[in-house]
Image (cartoon, rainbow, N blue to C red):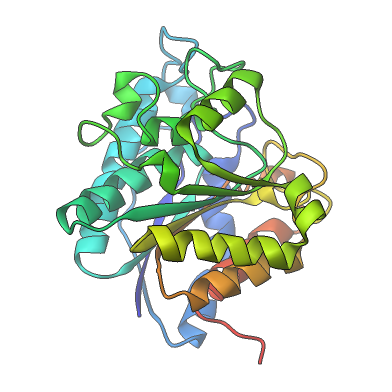
Amino acid sequence: MDVKIIEAPIDFGGKRHGSDMGPSAIRLAGIKNKLEELGHKVSFEKDLKIDSQENVDIGTNLKAKYLKSIVDACTQLAEKVENTVERKEFPLILGGDHSIVLGTVAGISKVTKKQNKTLGILYLDAHGDFNTTETTETGNIHGQCLAACAGYGIKELVNLYYEGQKINPENICYVGIRDLDKGEKQLMKEAKVTVFTISDIDRLGFSEVVKRVKQFFVEKCDTVHISFDMDALDPSIAPGTGVPVPGGLTYREALLLMEEMSNLNLVNSMEIVEVNPILDDRNCTAIMAVEIATRILGKKLY
């Protein structure tokens, strides 16, 4: 398979900065060599033109901080992702904070809509990222990005790259959720997204959750995008992320889910976000990110 690695060092969406160095950390952890060992042809997309956070204005809307910078960067990303999908390459996008999903999903969905395909998203995250400017408690756009993809929120985010909704929220499936704002939770319920919280995993067992996740996508979608926030993992094993929440997924659970999703032959794109090497321990979070990517791209233990 031809894999195109697109580095998106966007660091405007969150509060704790350093995720702009995430792509470099993942690259230094050996992602290219690991994927080539699996037989893939790996290349890198040319860099996005992104100003450093220190050199841009936060903007006048404090409910959507750094709005212009995020829209500009994600519009560039959307174009690169669209072109990659059109060439039938596998886009592997390395963030950056989770606001990059705005660009990634816009680029993918533009192609899938032209092809009359149904896009699904597997969203692994401790958080819902389903706030709007009406519900946000921080004004950070990385907490509003998936809602905007689903058509909720301010027009600048909803209409990024092309006008209108990018993903039907009924085709979004979350795994690992354990920290939601009150208004965000209500909006997710109204939107009818599917959610498997950490408590669901405890009640049902992880194997049953994996079974239901696979069934969800087989029944609903023609193609699947995986958006993996490293804070989905427990911070005791993945400390290098900006908004850690205790009680997360184990490394083994994450790898199993990636292997099982790979077996569906529906996953055609992936992003890995929120690796923050400033907060990491000997680059261990980036090393885990590399292994997670290899599992979705075909690595088997035996």
